[in-house]
Image (cartoon, rainbow, N blue to C red; front, top):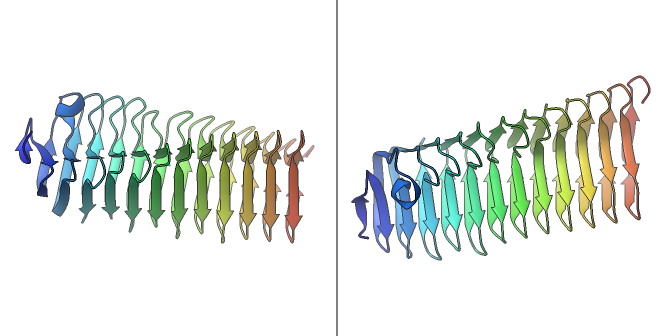
Length: 315
């Protein structure tokens, strides 16, 4: 492959430095032929003006930075849209890096994530009002295998059942801060989830879920979630949980709030050798038969200057 335009309006930076400008539409190509913006072998792509990247094929990524030293930098209202299954909006792999400053990313296919990072030193940095939305079963932000996502003053929204706003798996790390928002409306969806050594930090930001049996913040299997500095977690669906920990996981809630209003909801549940620390924070439920907190099976919840209140009938 050569740098520059190739294969159905792709822009490929294969060890070269390229400027993105205008529209790149690879529809309906699948796989590599469907990647709109692709940096590899330490190549770089930098957007100038408003860039539009559109894909509709399966496994066709909007922007893909692959390998150590590969970089894609997007700004100025750039728009990424994918509609195919497994078609990721922003994908950084094996040391690749993507930055998005004031951009919009929308995916709608099955397992089509908004921003996905995989592998040590792979990094996606999002800022300045960036909007990530998924209409299919993909997660908003997904980090795994020690990949990292940093989100500063952005919004994330998912609408499908079981679609997480942000999820970190197998040592992945996600930091969401400075007035960012995470919204999910699907049943059994997670606002923020950490699994198998993943870590998610919510710092001065808000999580809202409205689906039945949804969970605002969920840590499972040696995972960690931090909710800090005026953050809020709000759930309203039936049998929804504000925060839940399982299997040797840990959570810190510091100067923040967890609120549930659905019937049969839970403020916080701590299970299976897990540890929660709640400092200067509030946990409140208002639904019928709701439970404030529950700690079971060799687990510990520590409260310091915090409150737990229930106000619904039978709570």
